[in-house]
Amino acid sequence: MKRPAALLLLAATPLLLGQAKPVLVPDVSQRDIEIIYSFTGAELLLFGAILYPGGRLPGDDRPTDIAVVVKGPTEPILIREKEKVAGIWVNAERLSYRSAPSFYALASSRPIERIVDERTRAIYELGLSSLQLSPASSAPSTVQDRFARGLVDLKRRSGLYDEAPRAVEITDGVLYRARVPIPARVPVGRFTAETFLIRDGRVLAAATREIQIRKSGFERFVAWSAERRSVLYGLAAVALSLGLGWAAGMIARRI
Image 1 (tube, rainbow, N blue to C red):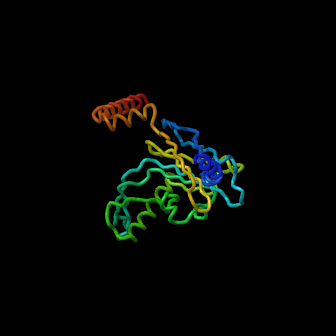
Image 2 (image 1 turned 60 degrees about the vertical axis):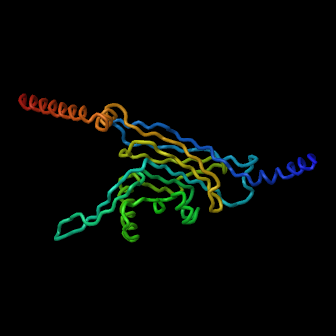
């Protein structure tokens, strides 16, 4: 009785291998990015390989796509809407969010709208229009949509949100790479780089790598002091102000 079962399992092996899914092996050029006084930005290289079952590429002409999402730590944010009253711009409506990505960048091999449908984009937050923001109030959906567009526009103009279609290069259907710019104003914290393998509108595989962005040198001391040693930070600020004032006075007397 054991022999027929073994033969059946052996015969079913090709089918099982055919049903196996590909695996992503991703990596990033920098796991740690240090921000110093002269930091003007960086370029993050994300690369990797697609491992297919049995080492065989799909035998059809249907495209295989890669999408890479780099996210920064979430943060609460308040958006105010300006309104012109009697020729003066004043604050009008406002909407706060419990959590919004401090940084978001999407790179894909094709425009994301041509790769996956709206539902899949919403599930995996693929694209700026699919970000799952968390408003702190129950404002009408029209108001939430307006403020969400405003938030994305502000972040995009500051270089903290970006969407780059056709920024992922796939070589021989196996190797891929993408470059994501990191602006000078990037926040510090733990970032994630998520890579998605997409085929026929479905996400077949996903993998995540972590990236740490932190301040270094004097900037790190200032940030650490402001957060954890407020008294020390205040004394240092006062001493620095007195020193600069004394130096300016000495220079003025000699001129």
